[in-house]
Length: 315
Image 1 (spheres, rainbow, N blue to C red):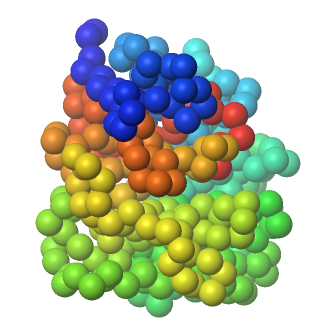
Image 2 (image 1 turned 45 degrees about the horizontal axis):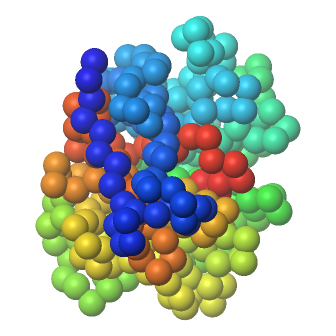
């Protein structure tokens, strides 16, 4: 299958930061879900691996052992081998005393081999062992409960705390191991009016992702806030990308974040339409050095992506 893969670079003949001698960006392999499947696409545009997945995923991981940790149904996280064998699965159920709907939007394989799973509806994070047993539970503070919007991206930090994006609350909260909120950042509308819609026309505070940086700041993908924000521990915005600030790119639902060792950021741009890339890499001085646009393999709902083969990336 021939794919449409556009890799471009801007400014000074598209030179990657790593080497001024290169004439163009080398590109990346991409693991992502959309259009009814999960696929790995090479830098040459060819599909290297795929499996059916009709669920619109919000997280995906290629593990160090080569297995894939995927979001295969609203409540299900599944680990596959490269040969597509299922070796682990967790299906989130309503917790005791709760009879409503449960959804999973984020998960993470931890250093001890357990798996973090965020359970919207249950309003909790669980850590699950290799036998599928819950070995730890962290309650979450949710002001506007909604099983579809309680959480989006969730990551366990190196210090043992949890960084949680609450889509419905429009807030990023850091929890300690006991479930106490120790830091919070609430998104605002950035001087624009709130408006409906999933594309560039929509605007709100439905936050999607957050990464704690090495300097202690937090990088936030704003979801339908149409922005990327870096905030310090006091909540001051110290760096940002606004909706139409980048040449040739309009931000819609901002999702996936990768922070590279050189400081560049890879941003997911979901629901932005075929005139925009689904992913792009930008320098700290806001020069776009790489774009991924593949509307044959994936579509306009590509939310979860893992950009592969980057050593020491934060995501």
